[in-house]
Amino acid sequence: MARGVARHLTRLGFVSVEEFVPARGLRVDVMGLGPKGELWVIECKSSRADFQSDAKWQGYLEWCDRYFWAVDLAFPTELLPQETGLIIADPYDAEVIRMAPEDRLPAARRKVLIQKFATHAARRLQALRDPGVLGLVSP
Amino acid sequence: MARGVARHLTRLGFVSVEEFVPARGLRVDVMGLGPKGELWVIECKSSRADFQSDAKWQGYLEWCDRYFWAVDLAFPTELLPQETGLIIADPYDAEVIRMAPEDRLPAARRKVLIQKFATHAARRLQALRDPGVLGLVSP
Image (cartoon, rainbow over the protein chains, first blue to last red):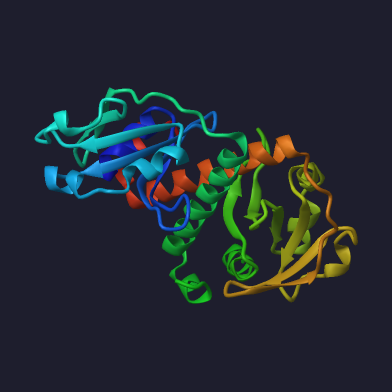
């Protein structure tokens, strides 16, 4: 599902990474970065139970400009809070059904997050291109 | 050689990408990003002829905080301008022999470059993880 979300973000002119850590103890499923520096968090939920056991999501709101859920067609979307965005996704593609309201990040936090995003993406890229590098960095 | 440079940068706490385009018409071999947002350009030269045919390198100085050459042990390093950094590299590792002088980027340009770096790294990462995305973006 994260793959379909990433593909749709590409169509919107965004890039994205998975399993992004905006701050210690937090890990978002997908972080999207737009052409103007917009940061979107997308949390993927596979089922009602998966959503109901998530006690952390409100902690992500302050680390993005917009917050979305990504679920599949079978998900009971009435469970999801209205003031969040909604993406319907499958492994191949996705679509924004309800745009999330914007709550813009302070400039200093955006700057830190974009640098973290750059570091995250470059590390993962290097690990794929050069598995030999893995011995050089701590896990 | 770029791989050895990238490995050494990892040891220094930097991440890096290859073939980075800081501005239209420019393409640097390796762009390194440090933990404090430092941006280093490293141009790899395989031979005297390769260096002497490079008419563009001075145009890269304004897109980084520090500029380095990376060459192998056989390269005639006396050809290289003194006011640049020097890295000796092979495919497996590298070492900074002469630290480049620092000429700090203006904050606005650094911000743009770090966002471009993030976009570049995330695009390349996604293309490796999901080759199916390639049809969605222009080349």
